[in-house]
Figure (cartoon, rainbow, N blue to C red):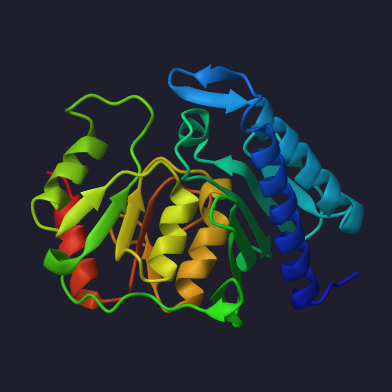
Length: 261
């Protein structure tokens, strides 16, 4: 049964708010364990993912689902939900209030719905393909920065890197040219920040579909663009993303710095 895009977006929003409530409820009473060195998972992640999955599966039982904490339900449906119940786990564990719930939906490989919820600021970012992007119901647009020297950028780095790692080298390359470069710990919120003009660009070579799906749609629906860090076409199933405000100059200068010898 086909569901109107508005209904899908509403379901994504409700599911994201549900996940956000669970994160806030667990904030003072979780314990943490490591999935891999410096890559933490908490009871909050698991509880939020189970609740989000249960909420969406009740409404769309035939859809496909993919989530960070081992969630994988495949089917013949063209719809695939990509769920990150807690994007920014390390921040959450340390009490740093920069984390979010991210829920993206694609149909036949095309992103059609995205919801990112920041429970600390009660900020709900929503986007639907062809329908624009909003923050708490108000339309958002990317920044008007026209050069890298006036741009604030964000980068994601792998959980364990040394100074010679390519991700560190790219970070330092851009740092020499951009106005400033930060590492925040939440790819979903970084993409939302590009979408609403708080920052001008974000890149990473270590993300998963659930990290990017909703945020990428928010960027493109707010006037920004995405590609790989080598300038090739972006794919949500590849760990390679450059998102920026759409300026050709910003893109060209970023690609020059992100290209390693």
